[in-house]
Each structure stands twice: as structure tokens, then as C-alpha cells.
Length: 286
Image 1 (cartoon, rainbow, N blue to C red):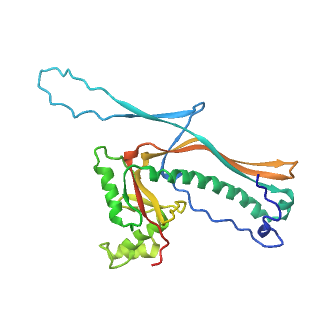
Image 2: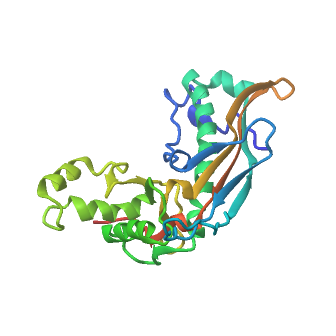
Image 3: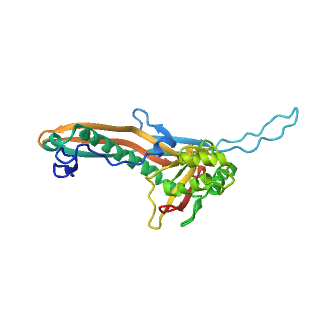
């Protein structure tokens, strides 16, 4: 068990600094754009049925009975949840030496940890999609986004809208370059200048699809990273219970536990409703 002592957090003590600082965390994206479902009281798992498509309706003849009936086919998936959690221990000695704001921030950092864990579980699903665009060392461009949208809409079973696109910030850099540099694309100059000033905040729609950047995506050893474009129903955030935090005194240890636990699952519900985006995510230099 890792125990935080006075010597471990010297940077947060009154004698060392006046104001404590916390590590800035990337904003969690997946919990907000996946389809959220929750287990009900007493439910161990969730079964999600899907009806198959019927053949085209048949031509009829006036006065002739329609005798042929079609069978409904149902397939489905079953999903269960698992727990994840983290806790830290702050000793009584350390608490007496910390500024009050630093002690409150300890709870925030614990919360960020569970949020990052849930988000990374969702991001890990992107590489498991069967179909996608791009490959290692390929530079992303808006044309790939258009191709992804077109594939989702044009396949035999079109993916239901709304769609979303998630990219690593370094991959997303190419989108900024494509649309915001005057004279380098077919975008209207006024639009380019507006986005150049704003640096394209990262959650504005492009071709009616919101684009999100997520720094929790981890590039591989070759600086390539998986993003995805997908229908919201392609992935599910299944909740047993939302993250619950606690503060509990441990008298024998002479300290306090600060922790959080969540029961959830990030699952792929329909493989055909998404496309992975595998592109270069090296740190931009221009």
C-alpha cells in the first residue's frame, strides 16, 4: 500500500510553497459521447437486442390475399460491469503541514485518476474496430474525415446519426492546418481567419460531425495513434454506479483515506457503426 507521508509531499508544505498545485489532467471525452446506459436495481448485466432487417416489401395484386409473412430475427449482446478504484492516505502529520487548499485538491486528483481510467478504457475500443482509415505514418487530413462519414452513411446498414470524431491533439493539428491557414485550402477566407484566431476549439462540428481531441490517447512507439469516427450507439458506457468518493479517518494509522470507486464497462456495441482512424501523432513542429 502506498502511503503519502510528510516527506513525500514536501512541495505542498507551508515551509516550502505558498500555494499547492495539481497536475493538469486531459479532459475525459468518452463518457460524454458514448451512449450511456445504466443497470437497474438488482440487475447484474444488460441485454441489448437488435432486430434484423426485413426483405423489401412485395408488390400486391388487388383482391389477392397477402399470405406470405416474414420472420423477425433478433440478435443481441450482453454486457456486465466491473469495479475500478483508487485511494490515497494522508497522514495526520502531513495534513497539519498542508495549506487548506492543497488538502482539498487531493480529492480532485483522486477523481481525475478514475476519470482518466474510464476514458482510457473507452479509447482502447477504437483499435478493435474491424474497418478503418489510415495506417502507420500516414498524415491525417480532412479528406479522411469525409471518407469516414461517407462510409458510415453509405454502407448496406447506414450507421445512425449523430456521429462523433475523436483524435489525438497532435493528429488534430493537421485539421487546424487544413482549414485555418489562408491560401492553403478551399475554405472561405473569413472562415479561415475566424478559426485561425480561435485555433479551432476542438469541439466544433465539421461536416456536421463534432470533432474532439483527447490527450489520453497514447501514441505507439512510432508516434502513431488510434482515433475514430463513429455513431454514438457504436459504443456504450454502461454504468453500475457512478464514481463514488469517500473520506475516512484511520485512527490506528493516524491518517485519512481519500478514495473513489466506480462500477462500469466501456463496450463496443456495433462494430459496423464505427471506423478507426490510425494516423501519425508525432509532436508538430510547424
